Image 1 (cartoon, rainbow, N blue to C red):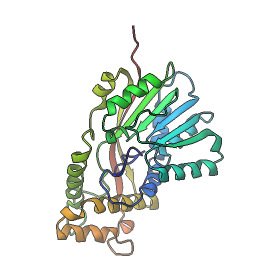
Image 2 (tube, rainbow, N blue to C red):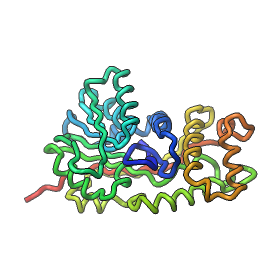
Image 3 (cartoon, rainbow, N blue to C red):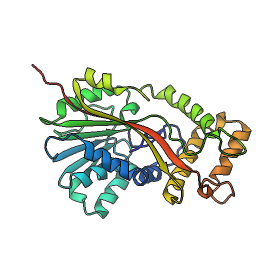
Length: 289
């Protein structure tokens, strides 16, 4: 689950600006770092009946797919994503977990017509809507496809996550905020729906908000190799997308943090944490006269 990536539509991570490096490792780390949050979020869903058919809209490597299958172990999931490579990884994980018959992966452009939605009981869209050229059109397609009583869950992330204290690193305090400001400006240039309030858009598409929540998450990385690696890979990808706009001093400081073998490596710090805000809406089609 996490806000995604700079190369296509919808996976699940907070990295909208980045270079050509594959996001698969970041997405898999995202699943580990936010496993507790995901389990709580899926348990919160106001389902009326146990869903049998689920669509993961912008599935990436399966962060949402496997969280949903943990909650609904008898369900079948159709995972849609623009990245065939990510879907191959998802399918491999499903096969390894003995879930091959319960997961189908379908490479597709989520802005294309038509979307292979079928008639799902539950549609999960995590950090994918803001990548779409016309998210309201896709929301209307989902509304029309949902089975009676079906539920759409939208999860979005408020920008790039933070990993360091504001006064870090010691030789270039505020480095992360300066990097994030560049990344945010670049992302907003080509992702106009980034950080949008999807509530009004959901209502305009004929969907009624049944429940919503905002979670300000802080995950301590002290002693956690996974959090350290997540921060490293996240900032490494961020660097690839903004290096040409950083000062020489900031770029050098960032490179010291990203040097896995260096004395200032993120992997050696005891003050790394993940700070991010995630918003979720659970909606159903508005009743028609």
